[in-house]
Image 1 (cartoon, rainbow, N blue to C red):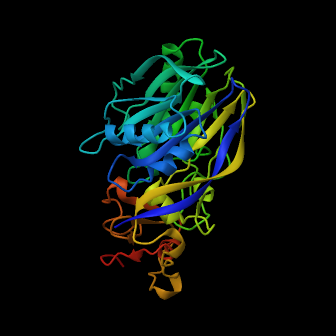
Image 2 (image 1 turned 45 degrees about the vertical axis):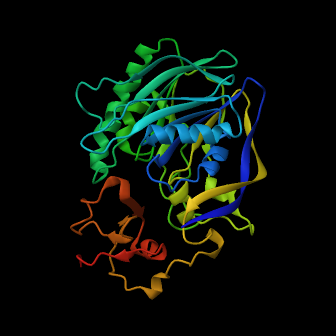
Length: 360
C-alpha cells in the first residue's frame, strides 16, 4: 500500500560565486529498479550539487525519473549515461547529471576498453567544463563487491593504470575518480593509485548502517590527481537521512532512507569557494511502506531474540530479513544486490533481522 509521507528536508544549498560548483558522486542504490524510490526526495538531495556521477543506475526509466525530479527545482539539469555493463545477468549503467550553465559537457564520453577483463563494470568517463571555463575529466566506477575484500583488490589495483589512461585521453586536463569503491581509502591495495592521486575524503563513513544515525563504511570517495589545478575548497559526505524529517519533526529512519532513497550517502567537493549552507524546506516523498517513519514499529531488541554467539561481521539479506555469518552456507551465495553488511550479530538483530536457520 502506498502512503504519502510528509517530510522536511534540511537542504544543503550551495552558497558560492556564480562560477563555483559543487561536484558530487552518489551510488543511488538500484536506481530505476522497482517502485520504492522517493524521487521527490532524490530530486531535493541532488539539487544540492551541480554535477553528480551516479553509480548503480539500472534502467533508462530510472535515469529519466531522477532527471525529472531534478527538474522540479531547476530545468537546467541534463544527463548522459553509459550502456549496461556487467557480467552475467546482473548489469548496471553509469550516469552523469550536470546543471547546465554551471557545469557543461565538453567532450570525450567513453566506456573504458578493458582488454584484460579486469573490471566487472568498466569505468565510464567524460570531460566537462565549469562556468569559469575550467575543464575537468571524471572517471566513475562501481567496484565489484564480490564474496570478500580479496575479490575487490584486482579492480582497485588496476585503477592506477586507468588513472594514467585518463591523462592520455584527456591531456592537460585535471582528472578525478568518483565512485563506490567498496574499499576504505586506507587499505594497502590503494598504494599504486596513491602514486598519482589522493582521496579527498579520509574520515567518516558513507554507507548507511541499519542503526539510525550510524554509518558503516567509507566506500564512496573522490580521488584527485596530485598535480591537479582544480581549486578545491572543501569536501565531505552529505548525510541525507539527517536532512529528511517527518511531519512531526522526527528524522526518518535509516531503514526508510535505505529503502526509498539509497544505502549510500553522496560525497562531494566544492570548487572556487563554494560552500554548503543548511536550510529547511518541506516536500512530499512518496514511497511504499506500511506505516510512516514516525509510527513504524521499532526493531526487535537484540535481547528479545536468540542470538547464536557469532563473532565478527555478519551479512543480511534485505529480502528475507535473515542474517548469515561467514561460515554459513548462504553467506557467499547471496545476490550482491540484496546484501546488507552489519558489524556484528547484535547490530543485525537490532535492525530486525533473524539468524539463518541452516547454520550453527
